[in-house]
Length: 464
Image (cartoon, rainbow, N blue to C red; front, top):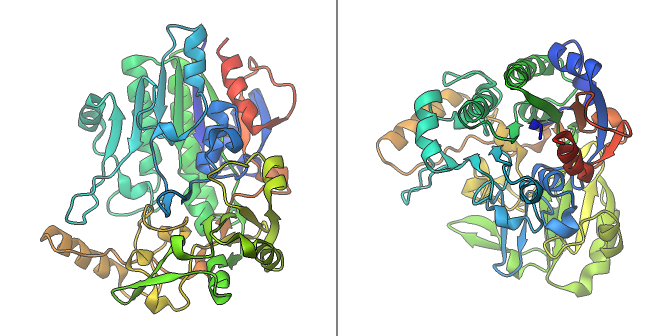
């Protein structure tokens, strides 16, 4: 049985593999490259679940990075328990025929309470006083302490938020992906897993900030190429075959679509006022949208207006298609967690979660990095509000409040969606914007285009 490392380079697509990525380009030229027909939606949690189960969202239930929990009347994003994936995973399948098989899962999603042998996940601590303290969750639990002793604490500031992908006093632009790669090597040297799954998010940040065509992206490509080089070289020296994959490609966008504001204008969406600010009241709304990049799940509490809602969506600028039950089935996303309708944006557009009509009434969490409280994905968390004249002073003041045990909000996130220049989720028209698979010549590939769910079998076949 061959040992294998699957390195997930988020956001990598064929148009990036050139002079700024000499090592990756050499891998492509010496081996095989295939375009991956993207998962639907082409977002992290769905794509990874498709790869690791060989099934689509209709079966495994991961319909996006988050969805509406109808029983609790709550929108829930970025949950981590592995039990949410309702299909057998690749490591469970391989253990049946290969009793000595072991697996390490490094920062791939749905990592908590998984049946892998070793895992590392981002997992901040949330004390009762409102603080958020960077941390990781590991299995076995002892890895958490030991790896911090050897590698230092995980640089959570570089994993998500305004500092991610940027040079700061706390670290380099690639510090999070570099730490993740080093943690994968740490696991490899101590335990030699049969299969290592490694997640490298570095490209995700600036491709969304500035867009894929901005010249500054070449710097990010060089940084991730160096990490790939070091990781692949280590694996090859230890007899491990590396495979590079990505989850999606990020396309240029210049248009934000506010579906919840449109529903509110129709009188269909309900908000609740708390302390002078507005919160989405999903359970009381006749219809609302759960936005996730370029797709939005549309949930109806009043089915009498379904046709009206669908017609309104189809006439909304920036919306490309609206899926009903037939098209949901056709696209492999007809699951109980999915919206009653699904809106897909045009390639140059994306959906906000915004439901307030005046920024002064936006909830307090809107201007912070708060991925679990927001009822939708928010790429503005990658920015510092340009309206803040002295952002470093604002941040320093907030950190001082925190140091003295005072309640505070790190309220530096803007509410201007025009700042976002890249997004993903739909299927780009140009294959150069699709995710890619790069592998050696020993992996059997029948075509230069592969369906996303077939990655599961590619991994298994590469280990034979």
